[in-house]
Length: 367
Image 1 (spheres, rainbow, N blue to C red):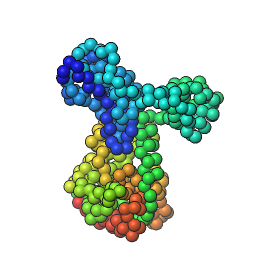
Image 2 (cartoon, rainbow, N blue to C red):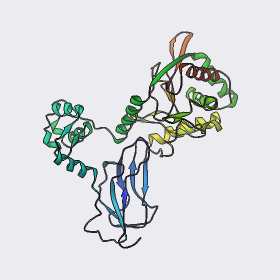
Image 3 (cartoon, rainbow, N blue to C red):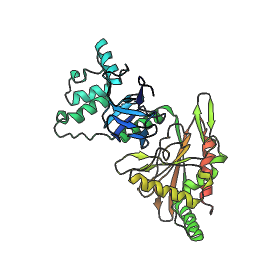
């Protein structure tokens, strides 16, 4: 790197669904010497926390403090050939500076949700004089920093970054994908008997959820449209069978780790993958690789007392299958499987054939 070269370190775009990243912490100090590929900070997307590496050799000069939600493309540091901090950085306005400049030029704009929240908590417009557009998120951040503005008896519980990102992804999905649903009731005794036979025959311990995921992995290639993504130019038919398994966290957040090449794995291997995801999610150790690349998702509410689930399709997928808890009475108890599908990609008959195939295959003994 030449003496005059100054390289920006910018927030990367990790996934198509994330417009911001949360800067968790810096792993090196200001003015530290770094090499290309060294981990310099830890970022968090809607999918996972990960270490971000230096793009080149040099000395790192930090300009953004940790603990902030920052837009993709925001410059958070500079790398120079000198340990001395330059008196002036190359001109590149930050998003906040752009907002402030726009505010000087025109009137303050406030979204309806933000205005409602401001009126509830008696927040004046001039509290956001540095912005051109005030969103609900801006008001919530203000309340977090100024909790005394809350109405007596109210208590603000700030959203985690992961909760905000998950909400953004699900809102986008539900607002852009025409969801349609089909359900099928299957004898609880028959399904549980199939699981029991497999466990006894192969001397393994699996759950009904494991059997469901393995069954889908085995037949999804026979239904290529369900393993696709809607694009304006046509359907992207995916070669890989990559199944996302929804896991609900204790704090209310949702993660969907992905079993890649699931059709090449045995039932025991799939069960092991799911157990591994569960353990790592509790410890917040799921990686970006664990959480990306899914083409179909499965979610289960077994054990919750909820008998039927109407799930939301994950962005860039064609469908998601949910199973509820057993319901009924005496010898007439059932599990209900519900398929949510993108009606642009599948019609009801196609979706119904897939759902029937899943249920029929689950009732067959398999290895």
